[in-house]
Image (cartoon, rainbow, N blue to C red):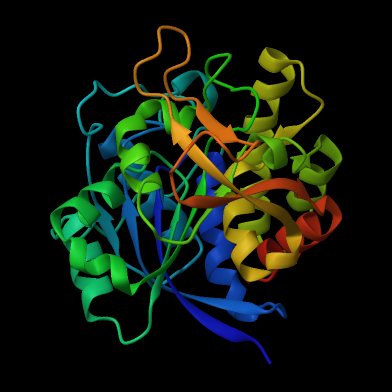
Amino acid sequence: MAKTKKVILDCDPGHDDAIGILLGFASQDLNYLYKLDILGITIVAGNQTLEKTVNNALKIVEYANIDTKIYPGYAQPLIRDLEIAPEVHGETGLDGPEFPGISGSPEKKHAVSFMIDTIRESQDKVTVITTGPMTNLAAAMIGAPDIIDNIEEIVFMGGSAYTGNWTPAAEFNILVDPEAVQFIMKSDLKKKMVGLEVTRKAMFYPKDINNLKSDRSSVARMAGELLEYFVQFHINEKGMPGCPLHDPLAVASIINPDILKTEPYSVNIECGGQYTTGRTVVDFDGDSFDTPVTDVALDVDVKAFKEMIFEALKSYR
């Protein structure tokens, strides 16, 4: 019998964030170990500016008729200027499909206040999934350290044990706000890093996208149009045969923990390197860092992951 995990989803939509949102809410209808009780979606600037990432979250939940609340958070990193990725996600941050006009609006409560109050008041421990820069979560933990005891786990899409994707050393989410991530890495909380080692294997190809675009579910077709835009960037600009689904893999790893193979290592974040700022430095030898260990994802069951994505997106009617 499936168990339920209480979750806050913190993201910066973003094409792959959008698929992650759809997967998370579809988990209630899937037959895996865990179903996600998503308490709310908190938004941060990253893939695009905060105004656009908030609008993108609203577009997705309204299109899929998802009943949830959207909480705008930080519009910039803790101490740095914001870096965004319009070349990957387009001027809206969610280029591709034509969405209807937004009818709803985000909550007035700030994402960090929502995180603090929700985690503090929850009778069950809360898992936080972050698929964008980790500014909101770091600010919540700094401002209300008492909530740390009521966080079950932090699962974050970001980083790489080896090479980056935004610079040779750094993955985008970590590079945008490395100080926020380093603060979190120093905590004793259970953490799982879903980085490029596994997300680059979680590839959707044009044939997979055509599969979605031909489905009877309007949500699956919309997701196919999103990924069609996303895959063209990766084919044309990166020379890849498909597009990695970075963010949904973090969500999937909670619904079915067997999708990822992880190993515990200490991880530190480079915050001041001339060429290496944002690098997630993994202590494979185990004799250099005193940072509490993080479960670092090193391999993925791609077949099981893709089956979950298809099942989730096609479950919307």
